[in-house]
Image 1: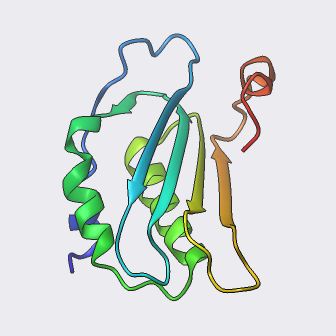
Image 2 (image 1 turned 135 degrees about the vertical axis):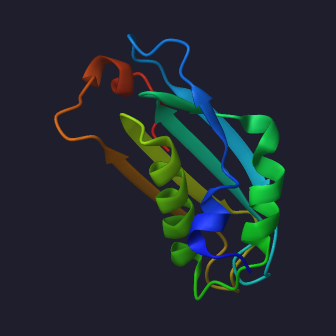
Length: 133
């Protein structure tokens, strides 16, 4: 398992082609790994600042995530959010992790949603148009 900085270095970025405007990027990925947490669908939404993700290079990062043993579903979501937030430093970011299989007989759907934004950034007209979760 890689150290945190090595793992985060697998998330590659490039310059935002439109830093003067606010726009939303939405990515959905299926993650695999330990049965306690995965498989799950990750929905990542962000308003770029200076950087955007290089999406064709995410497979290596996802492979590293699949090797991590998480204590629970929420800790996986927090780690993913921290990694993407740290590497992108977006104006706004939202990450939703949605478990595709039942946890047990009592819980048939498990989802965790996280959100963060830069201080003093706001564009309610843009964010209000987004589908909630």
